[in-house]
Length: 521
Image (cartoon, rainbow, N blue to C red):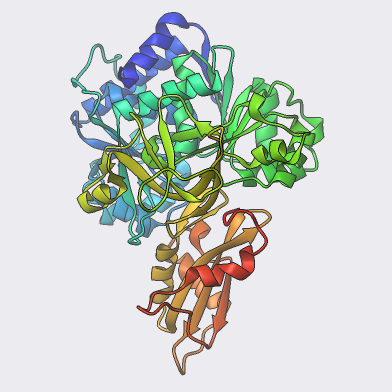
């Protein structure tokens, strides 16, 4: 099965059912399919060819959904770009990913102007909205000017590259995760089976659509003829208004969003009773905060776990597995990210590769049709991640007798702050570019609002003078704001090291995480 088969199935069974709803109006599945096919014809009319790579840098909208599907119809693999990255980071991705056309939200036009001269491979920039600009292609005019593309322009195989999703890298450079047709379609099937989606559902795209944490729902909800509603960017009020207006039944939020909505003064005045499932992921939600959210929205919360490399779902909870009032053993399940989703084999193993016993900590590994093809132009890192037929996640967990998984730590040197992955080495590399920095180590510490906050510990060169504010501002010029340290601790003593000289981050984390069951928040 290919992505186009998901869309054609929805058009055949639900042609006049609302498919897409946002500030620009509502489109039925028949209309949405026509728009996608007109857009595909329009991209080809620009001189782009099947196999060329395209990218999108934009906030959530129905046009983002259309772009995900046009990748298949036009035969052009798509790279969804993180809108919070700096021009420097986007420059690397656009060049590394060999992007020929960029679909651009008007709100990022100024950012693109910083990239224009440094990304010579981009032949066309399509503006998704706003007034037409000289040198740019207008998205809506492109659709209006072309007849719907009939048939196919590329004979796909299920193993062909469909999405190129960039994540942070342990080397300090973003790496492109190659997802095939098989990967994303399999994940959609797994999600439908696990979470019970149907044509009666309306999904709210409020988490960023460049993240697979939300993007997978473009495919899964379409597969069953559900309706997609969109919020351009998260705010508590905007999200609550959309839930009420569109009678949203399901969505996914990161814990930071849930915390903001629970504490938003006007939450009670909105009707959110249509909601029957709120998935959360990217980082855990503490039991006390989960119970606070249940008091506001009802017992509708389930944690899911996955990663870009697995399209993304690996495990998920179901509502009837949750227990909010019971013995200590039952209540502990509130902190579980669930069991393996249908179609995926998830194991927790020790260093020898053997399954751990219940309660023992090991690494999560997984295999299934949703596991990536590999990393773009990174054969060594691909071989390291895909060993013995399994994806090695780098996440540490326990698993109980009933196969519920509990995340406890990360083997990878990564922080999750506000639902975004921050690789410590990226922040450390930025800090080392400051002339006053002798040593730097970055760790994640517990934070009530963000889950984890980025803390940098810095030793300055002898005779140098630098302040916390200067170092934070220095980082803002090099990396995305969410990656920058929330706090910098300056010290004169060297950072703790092992015999071979490796910085002992476990010792640095210990004072902040002592007394906590999980070493992630």
